[in-house]
Amino acid sequence: MRVVIADDSGLLRDGLAGLLTEAGVEVVGKAADAEELVGLVAATSPDVAVVDIRMPPTFTHEGAKAALELRTQQPGLAILLLSQSLESRYVTDLARTHARGFGYLLKDRVTDVGVLLDALRSISDGGTVLDPEVVGHLLGRNELADQLARLSGREREVLELMAQGLSNRAIADRLVIDVKTVETHIARIMTKLDLHQTPDEHRRVLAVLAWLRG
Image 1 (cartoon, one colour):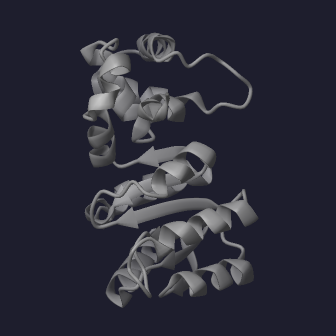
Image 2 (cartoon, rainbow, N blue to C red):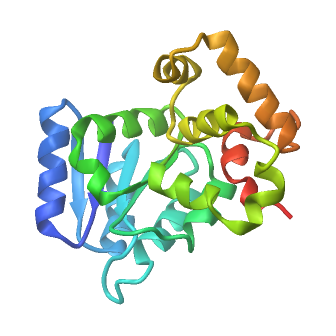
C-alpha cells in the first residue's frame, strides 16, 4: 500500500509516517498544504491519501476540498480524512458521492496504529470507515427520529459497527453472535431504512447516512 500524508503539522506528518513505515506501509510523500497535496498525488500516484481537513492558508476546509477535487480526478484514490473535532461540511458530500474508499477519523483515534492500519486497509479495499464519534453524532440528530426509531437496540449496535468499517464476521465477533444473525440484522436495517437493493448503491454506507435522506 502506497500512502501520502497531508497535514500542516510537521510533528503529526512525521509521526504518522513513522508509525506507518514501521508497520510496513510505504509512505511515498508528505505535504504541508492542499496545493502541495494535489501536486504530490499527481507525481506519486498513491493508493491512499491521508488528509487533514483544516490546512493553510485559511485553516477552514482546504483539505476536504482538495480531497473532493482528487476523488473527481482520480476515482480510484482512497481518502482518509482527519480532523481534531467533528466536521460535517464537505465530509457528507464525500460520503454521499464517493462512498467507496472513503474514511473519516478524529485525530485522537489515529494514535492507535491498529485503528489507523485497519482504516487504511478497509478504504484501500473499497470500504468506508466513519469514526465512532461521528456515527454517534449522526445517530443522535433529531431528524433521524422517524427512521431510526424503527430500529431495535441491537440493530442500532450493528449499524454503528457497520459504520466503523467492520465486516459481518467482525461484527459477529464483537457482539458474540453468529454471522447469520448479523446478516439478518443487516437485512432488517436495510428494510426499515427503506434502502432497497440496486446495482449502484453502497447500501451499508447509505444506512449510516440515512439522516441525509429526504
